[in-house]
Image 1 (cartoon, helix red, strand yellow):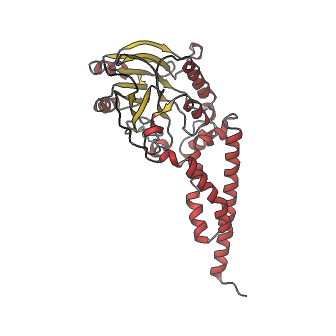
Image 2 (image 1 turned 90 degrees about the horizontal axis):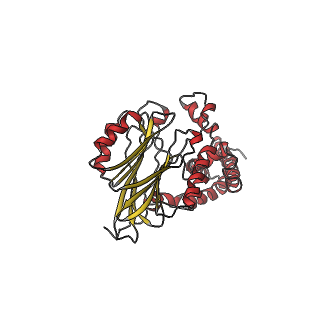
Length: 359
C-alpha cells in the first residue's frame, strides 16, 4: 500500500506532537510532585518555579490545539489532565469575584513601592492626591523626596511617619488621616537591612488598629547574577533565586503577628508571588484583599520604571504587593493602579470595618 507524502507528514506530525506532549506532561508531573512533597525547602530553581507556577502551564495553549489538529489522541491523553489541573487550581483566582456592598464604615488605603530610583515622584504624588485614600503606606521612596512629600501632604494627611533606610538612599512612610499612636521597627538592628518593616498603632474610628508597613527583601542572590543584562538577566535571576532571607523576614512578621492583640492591616511589597509556598503561610493567618475581591491576576511586577531595561518592556507578570487584613475587616474593593515610574504597581483596597460603629 502506497503512502502519500501528505499521509507521511500527518503521521510524523502526530508522532512529534505526541512525543513532545508526553515529555512536557512528564516534566510537569515531576514538578507538581516536587511542589507537593518538597515545596520551597530546597530553594533554588524549584522555589523559582513555584513562584512562576501559572506560566509553566502556558505550553498547553499550544500543545492541546496541535493535538486536536494532528489528531494526536495519545498526546491529548497526556495534556488534558494538566488542563483540568490548571483550570481547578489557577482558574478561580482569575475569575471576577462577587460584588461586596459595605454596610458599615470603610477604610480606603493604598500601598506602593515608589522605587528608590523613581524619577517622577511628582507624578506619584499627583496620582495619590486623586485617589483620596485614608491611609497610604509607601516603601522605598527616594530619600531626597521624603521630607518634601510629607510637607506637601501635611494638610491632607496630618498624621505622618517616615524613616530612612540603611544602605540605600530611600525610606518608607505612612500618611494617615487618623492619629498614629505608636511605632515600632520589626527589623533586627544587627542586620542593618535596607528593607524596612514597621508596625504602627493607628486610631481609626475609635478603634486601635495595628498597621504593618512591610518591604521584604528581593529573593535573589545578587552576587551570582554577574551583572547580566538583556535576556541573560532573566536566566541569571532564575538561577540565582534565593528566598531564605525573605522567608526569614516573613517568619519574623508572622511571629510578631502571633502576639498581636489588635485588629491587623498589613501591606507592602512582599517580593513574594502568590504561588510561592511562603504565601500560604501568610494566607493561613490573614485575608488577602485582592484575592477576595480583585479581578484578574493582579500582577504588580515588573512595571515600567522607565530605565530602558528588559523588565521595563515586559508586562506585569507576578503579584508581589499585597493588602492583608484580619477578620476585623471585610474586603470591599481591590485593584492595581497604573504604572508610575516604579518597578512595582500600586495596590488600592477598600476595607469595611466589621462590627465597629462609625464615630
